[in-house]
Length: 79
Image 1 (cartoon, helix red, strand yellow):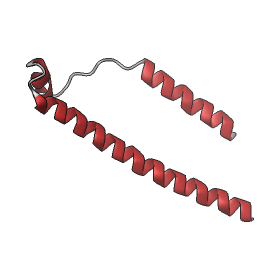
Image 2 (tube, rainbow, N blue to C red; image 1 turned 120 degrees about the horizontal axis):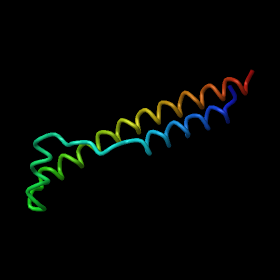
Image 3 (cartoon, helix red, strand yellow; image 1 turned 45 degrees about the vertical axis):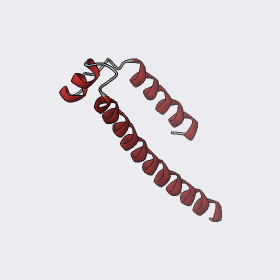
Image 4 (cartoon, rainbow, N blue to C red; image 1 turned 90 degrees about the vertical axis):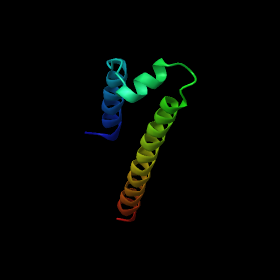
């Protein structure tokens, strides 16, 4: 499988995943905090902390993936 075909397949899977998702229910604590209105800052804090944790996870995975990709490309170039 060529690199271009692999990227097209990954992009297709990504688009299908985004388009086919449904609304998720929040945990009971977050749902109650959001239902009580804008005064409830705890629900918003939970949301931001979850987004931060997911962002850090994806940053680390992306960094390692880029590192491996660059090392493999450098090794193949030197051969």
